[in-house]
Length: 452
Image 1 (tube, one colour):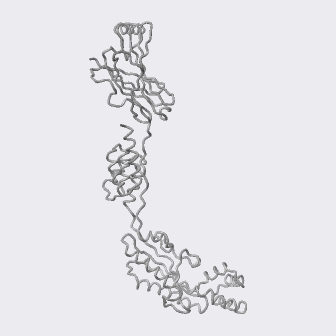
Image 2 (tube, one colour):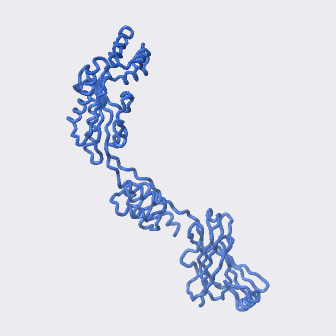
């Protein structure tokens, strides 16, 4: 039996080119390859089916005209090239007429032929928004009459946009220092280190911790004021970081202060000893290797005193601030404060303010942390998938020994056209509780069911 295959490629809705060849072919009526309508992508649909004249009576001067149409549920229609099965006389007559007119006839077959009808149809916008069906209308034409046979539906399809797998960035695992730094302002990465600025009042430094001392003393007393709570907090942070393999204490900055009353030289020495005392206490409690200590004996806490006065509404505030601003000699500055308002203001400061300035300010612990390289690799692969470079993402992830990779690796395989491998990866990720992987599995399996 002579078999013909029509292969039509329609470049656009307005321009269509038909190419036909004839070969020996044997197949039962029905779609070629299983599906009559298949989306190549969002721009084209492949129409593939088998056509025969069946039991139609097309003897002599009669012919059967089969017209395939892609029809949308919303009424849209695309008419495809017809196929004609003609009786001997009809075919001879029309072949002669075409020859005289200089035309080429295609798509004309004998009653016993089986035709493999294949076309690639350019998609029109309406086809993307409605369910489609492939309908065949069949008309038998004689010399002076037309008999319309029942039509039939050969296939249905609905456009499903390409699936973009769900991909969330992997949150890097944080070191102990990084986790603690979320709620401990004194902890900072060493990259944030800045030299001490004596113009900034200690009381305005974010998260400053204070260890307090008695007048003219530099020995640490755990039970004095709130020292025990502060010291325990410092030691707990240092021990936790030193016990962690992913973070290390690199630098510790301690500021020692003294209150303004008393000789200037003595107060300078006192502030230095207080900074040293706090360092020595920390070393006695925690084994610290390779830590750089930065101690500052900041002397008398004049910057803190002025800042406190500015924020207060105490009697004589403006006069006291004026003395601090106008007098640069620190010994003379103290003498003038003592005389202000008959000594009452200085007595108030001595009882209510200076007590908080006899301290060591434990300002900052700077740490170094080992970065989560596997998380960085996985997130880099995720970006590659989004950029369309799935093969590079696969090459990054396959050798990586980290179970957090499976969802991204599945997405890379899926976008590379390896659906079975993608599902295997997603199932591994889902077993670890990955919600993105669960969504990916559900959606891809739903699409697989639509294809069946």
